[in-house]
Image 1 (tube, one colour):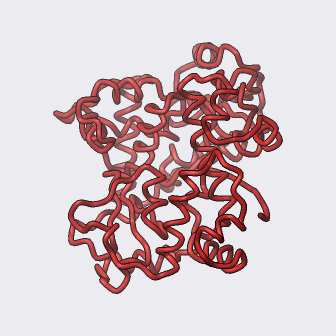
Image 2 (cartoon, rainbow, N blue to C red; image 1 turned 120 degrees about the vertical axis):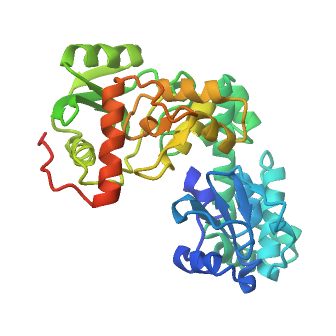
Length: 374
């Protein structure tokens, strides 16, 4: 098979036009049923375009060419519109069967020819059809599935050898030759929570006092708010005791500028890459927090229900309290059930100020106040 570039995003890649898909969902277009499905991050459910359920916010929606990829990304089929039962084109039906076959045979050395024989078509036809529907090749799809399974096993605490074979890698060399591109680090480093990371940091003034921003070359690892430098630096070393930490005033200036503009109300949307240590549950909570719209709030119990864990309110609160990248992951947007502020690692006054700023910008538009320079 041709190229083997792999990444988590490949499970969501497709040639779908999001604008056209959203129009179909907004119109509940029955003619689009079977052509794609849409998933709602806040509920964890995917539907056919004509689903009569309440229309979600656009920011919460993700589109998939076939139900199989929606399910591989953790979404459940809607019980109301039953998207799996929608009539699909012959091409989409074929690709759906191939996706299920690939998932069931990740530990085997299947080839394009063996897949073609399974489908009863030529290898060239299979490759072209799969790419047309999914936007990636069968090999890329298999690589993405293996990578996701590998990460899950490593986070559970499996040793690298056990994890790579459980994930379907036939040998360690197949994984290690591409581990940096796939994991961002070697599997052993990934398993040990990023031990050996090199983290640079800088501290600048911001509307809420002092702002510490720390990052690796892959993304932001810490965003802290405080009144003075010393406690912020100590908190960073406590958060990452195994990392090599150094002062870096210039290497992350673009991320610092984005955060300052955001805190000044000049850049409501903040979508920065992150590189943090976390359990699988923490990551799910933090992903959910990043989906809360600017200027809006949710309660801890609402977040728990959105995760499908209605009794996990306290666990959600702990995940918020241990969030190392405040503002980027907006844990300040989570309140108590009665509307009270709850807790906030950097002080309730700062949480209140962040919420008031967001409400003001949402109601009156972008702030014209200049952001402090870094």
